[in-house]
Length: 201
Image 1 (cartoon, rainbow, N blue to C red):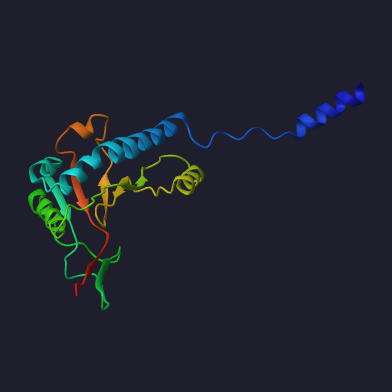
Image 2: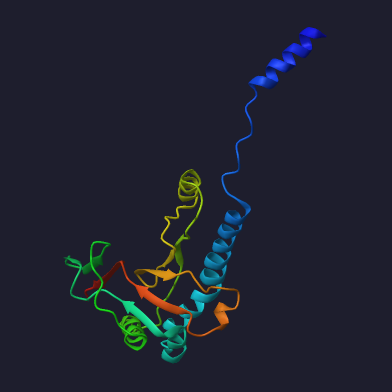
């Protein structure tokens, strides 16, 4: 009996305390909200409405998504890297390419519609959330875990990819009623894009 108790005592002394949780309940809720509002509300409900308006060349509906103080930046058509082949010309812009001068919502929307009108037939238009990047106020170890698990740098923005343009979208003010509201898109800056123009014989 003494040997058994002594063995248990030694084992108890050697046992390591349980590590503290990596994220607090508040941090976990924040990530859950980011996934819900970014992935579901914005990605599955709001952005498809914007894509539908662009596909249908519906200027008024498209314009309503942008706030009156909206500021956007898109690449200059003559910038970027161009490669020409006998069958097509490819042009691309990367993060190293600086977007053009800021524009208001009317000019920005007209530019998007000009892209859409290059198609003879009704195109397939898709806007998707490509990467969510919420800010985390937690320990550096937890931030590293979250970044590696979720792929979220800590910049507090989201990325969408509309018709070849990959742009960051502000993730504030998004809530369950956002898809039914007007003026929820406050800013949009392109930082990656690509397109190809085919040649007819």
